[in-house]
Structure formats: C-alpha cells, structure tokens
Image 1 (spheres, rainbow, N blue to C red):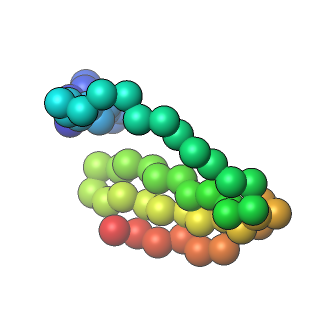
Image 2: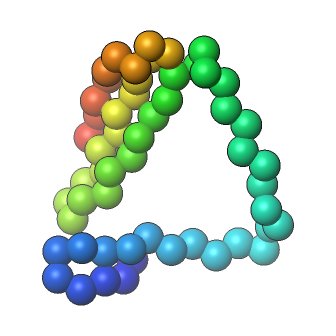
Length: 56
C-alpha cells in the first residue's frame, strides 16, 4: 500500500492478461472497504438488502 495522510491506494501487479468479469443479478454482491487497521466486508442479497458485515 502506498499513500499519504489518511487515504491510501492498493496496487497489485500480475503477469496475467485481462480477465473477463461475469456477474449475475440473482447472485447479490459484496463490497470491501480497506481501513488502517482492518478490512471490512459487506454482503448484499439479490434484492440489495444487507445480509452480513464482517471485519477482517
């Protein structure tokens, strides 16, 4: 990670080429938030309702 102050950027390099992204509206979704001391994960169902929040 690199950055200044409270903000930061996450960068990763890989030797692989582009990957096609496949999504399904019936599957729901997940979001990841990076913080100074932990990662937070939020999961939503296919209707957009919050299912679970976890701290890692």
